[in-house]
Image (cartoon, rainbow, N blue to C red; front, side, top):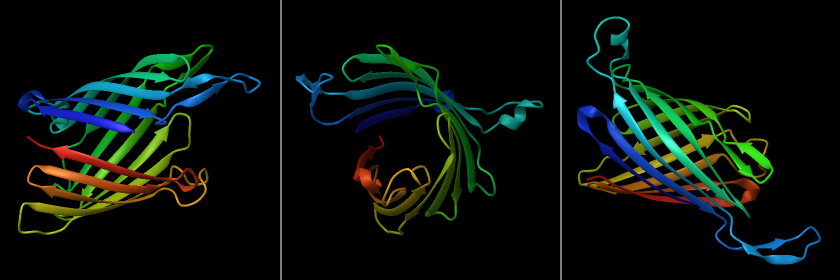
Length: 232
């Protein structure tokens, strides 16, 4: 699984973002017919690219508009392509709303709706994209300790919750170190073995950061995530 993203601030005019995702099995697979005879090989993959824009509302006057001051709203257009033996393509929209800070700048709330519209069609079979609604929150316990809680409502599945915590160690240099842990109830009852938990760390220096997470997936195996972030 490969992922890349770029975000650019436009100051008071908002912000732009682009991202790209690519997923494959990492190797070619043998294609067979109905009786098991080999017909060659194929390499399935999924990819998605999106471009988005976000704007923070401010300076609104008069009721009821001034209650929206401080809210940020975003919209992203997503193009999706999937290939097994044939290729399917579609498009979708993601939207999001982020609240201003509450309770002495400690709490922020958010709402997203992802994969609105679009269906993947392989020959005679058609499948809608996984539409999901998410209500999220982040609470700053102190200047170094952050916690979060999301509740997700997928269209074709049961609602589930995900929570996490991040703590940055105090340092007196440009180096920064963080520890993270999380839990998601999404796989409870559907995957055997240890699943749903995650643990990770971050190492930063000036405007650069490397993040690592270990996420067991029960009988499906173990996954490890590494990402790099640069601000300039």
